[in-house]
Image (cartoon, rainbow, N blue to C red):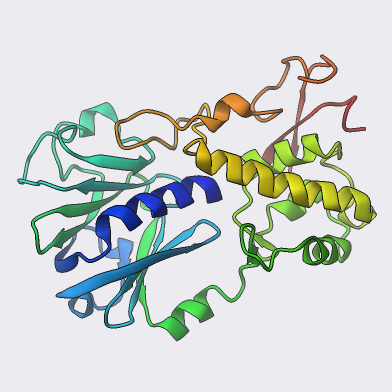
Length: 292
């Protein structure tokens, strides 16, 4: 699943290409992929984009908001010059989980769930192989209500070290599990939780309320640092290949992984083999020596 940096890279791209465009049509190929009255978005101009955690919002002139969640296999494809059945690789920009080779011949393909058409003829495709992703239409109040259980976005100015420390002090769950709790911190995923804990020299199994304030300051710092670095690097494309760029290339932050997906490889600091365990069903990577 794309994490905060990957979704932010998508948002920045859409911000540059969709602002000011007017939606002229929405083709719904899978009913479960769209929630809301599609008639309400027709002839509406896109005014801005926003993001909280892993959720992306496209704001319309009539104050309605399209909320996108890519989930595991969601894919956004933008085609500035489109003719039906055109080769999928010509003039398109793709973000998210790569479509299988057999689906890449034309657009739309069998993974396409929604097709947004703009007044200038360009199109935005929402593809999703496993149909877990979705787009929902909300009013501002409805959007606030739908996101009320999300914690602060990691890149929010309100995500202070004080807030972070308070949140991790009220639970005895392992710190790695707490970091992935979206009701506390919106946007932290498995990649960045593993590496931030390593850089902070904190064992992922440590009870959250046993983290000292000094260690919490370090962890807060590294969470923000690696998120920011990843955005600049275009996000991370891990071994599962579930996040790619417009030209089919990968993000580059995976070359900076500290421990994530490095089980058995030598620690970058002490050369001890990286260990892999499972916490709350998620693969967890750490150095047994650096993170005692």
